[in-house]
Image 1 (cartoon, rainbow, N blue to C red):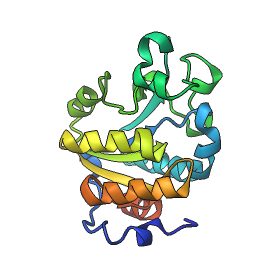
Image 2: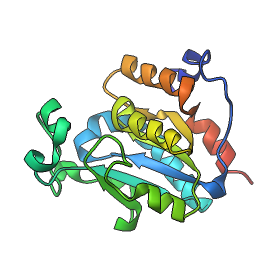
Image 3: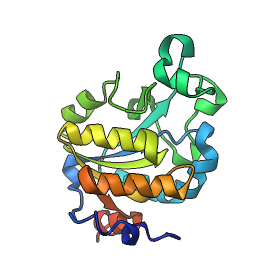
Image 4: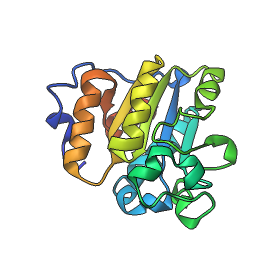
Length: 199
């Protein structure tokens, strides 16, 4: 990674750990056309993680943010933002480079938190998942909110510092610091791949 985020947050990231493949799922959050500009910087890392996790049999869950009618299902997001993503629009589509596969691996949502108003928790528990690797965009909105709620639901959370991205380095770093302090093991793509792809 061009910026050594792990060095920058070392003061708070004091609980080293790695996921257990047969208890873990990879979350790929909102890697959609709407966010392509921000997502481009982490696309290669996420693609590598998706491939590695699939190879070792780990579930890969993609979230897709969108609204059918912002006046009805927009809530505070509709008040806060002026350009909500419409379901079915080109901006709503997942980035094809990630090969998300069939709809069974996709969780559609309309809030930052991927657990809010979805069956994500039920799906994960049915598969015996107790740990989550969080990747995607935006670090400080959907990724962080989902990671925090996962922790509160007693999932062990691994947050990938160079497979998440947002609109500024300052916001990204602030999220990493907060998550390392109280919610997640912050890890790098390289370290995860070394752990998951073993001979």
